[in-house]
Image 1 (cartoon, one colour):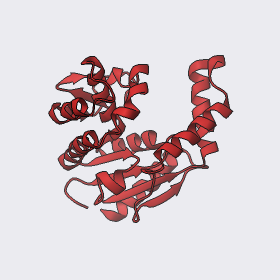
Image 2 (image 1 turned 135 degrees about the horizontal axis):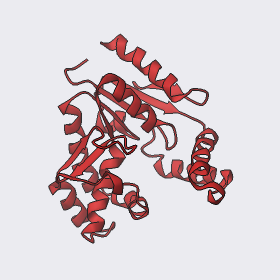
Image 3 (image 1 turned 120 degrees about the horizontal axis):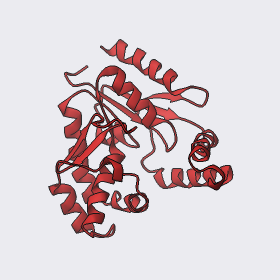
Image 4 (image 1 turned 90 degrees about the horizontal axis):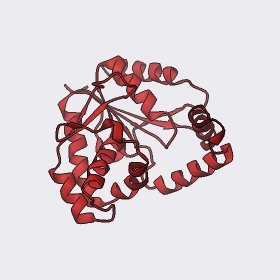
Length: 225
């Protein structure tokens, strides 16, 4: 493995990438990077500056000129990481309804993705990293030391998501059927990016707990060391 090891974890929405990636990074002492958080941070700033999600030139310039940093959690508020934009902590704003609505379009522009790709690779070159997303092993870190692709049936992912929503929203949570349909639609929209790298290790997690997957990946890391 290189001086600053790179572990790429890909998989569809609801496959457990965030939980597994964060726990793995903590066990290894690596930086955990959810690439989606960077696009959300960009969207936060774009909304503040009234740059529309359709404004390709404005968003591209913003992505190229803004300084993004990802750090281990700096507050004990349940966050998995801290994201700074030009030195300002925007982590609490990343999951706001406005950002949730705008980020799919904001992140879809090639100029934006090119600029953010450079930022993501710079983070991976700075220290050992566990990076999660949908195209990490194929596009962002094609030479990663270890590539993992998590595979889970859409019904199982919907069940997990529905369970979380029930805990958060109670009786106002959407039905399981609605969550499953939304998950299937998201898979369809993400289909172009959701493909395992040829050398990725595929792990079926339907019947596994997150910690079981982490232990399995740690065994692989040990074999590479």
